[in-house]
Image (cartoon, rainbow, N blue to C red; front, top):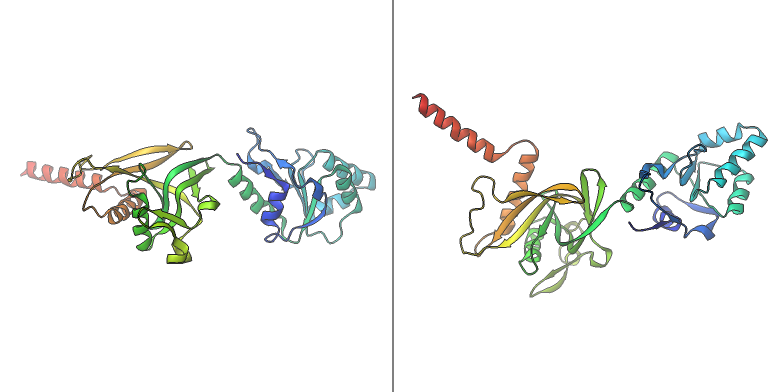
Length: 314
């Protein structure tokens, strides 16, 4: 889990949420730490003095509540807010910021910012950012692409031809996400999302050609930033010119666990004369059919059984 600071949140969202510093900028490098017992949706929310969030958002409704308190109760509430040591307090839609809030923020060295955006929008965007960056992650070797709309990881030993296959798939209109190293994050109990490390973005290494810039060669549409991992295709060297029959009905299908999420995996033998790009696209189309409830193997078996039953009746 990578540490996230107040400054990370501010810099990432300052333009989109129109964030501006009021005070407490000296605390911008404070780390927001995830507790294993605390889901990420408890990190940010509207003003809560009973169970304080690490990031407290004060909008018009919350400000009306505070202003409706008597002077002593108002001061007590603000002092309690900052005594709970939130990492960040965000004021939204506030035309007039009470001096007590600013003075307590300065006194406690707590970051205080304002935004002209709606509080719900602020919470939604920052909550997604925290969930994404504080989630479990793993880095895997391979090539990750969007093939016919779904995320496909090409795996296999070094030198087997993953990058060459990826180049052919891109030339057929599919999109590259990452080559060599892919960072996968578990963004929900049953979803793993993959993206490219910044240093490798746009590049694909092909033996004999060296490093290629896919964006410069094929344009922006040839790349995508991230995608849900839906299918793994593992390339294996075929020991004979004719690929062995792994399973005449289901092929080399099994499952692999990535961050405790089960991902379907297909093993494809690499052999001379096989058009792997076409086969990969066919595998993806078949995976989509299976996901939608149609299984060609089961259909074939039922058809054969029906044929046998009809023949027996005669």
